[in-house]
Image (cartoon, rainbow, N blue to C red; front, side):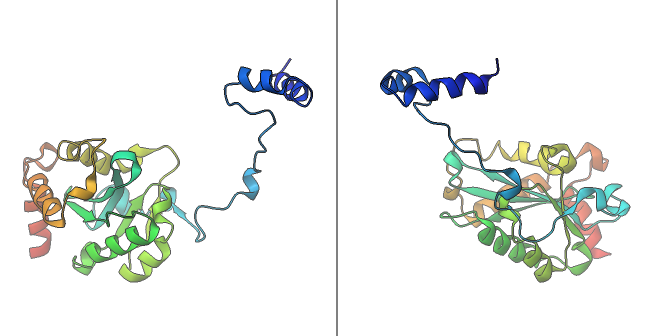
Length: 219
């Protein structure tokens, strides 16, 4: 006998004189079956077509060409605040994007990313790789404003943005989970980014991300 059959029998009993007993016995407290929306009929998260990471050029994958970035949000207490993080794949250079205290929706994230990316020279605006979070629903508008295509990771595959994931772990030393991230000003974020970018990295032969980026800017 399947679970569905058992529930249907209980809900049938609730139509008669056992409504209160059934309501008390079922964890959800429901006395009728909650309709499930057909996945094919759900409102899509993105109205613009996504380009998946499998279509990302090889030059991005092997880190041979600088200017390709990975991004994500670190989210504060109750999901009410967030900071956008950007990590350049070749140099591991980090940029932190201040978001409004009241919102980190797709519009706020688009505006924050555009504002930050436009501070970079064009040869460092190669591409952006992100997960499939709803905050990137306006990715097409971001691309139009910056000239940077956006590539999306497969679901539940944070390792496809490994540099960004590692950096987010370091950032949690400054922005612990369960805290209100809206308390941090743009100046606070800049200070934290400078500290990270001033750390020597083994993967960079003990250069710092700031030194590697300085060399790219000089070139």
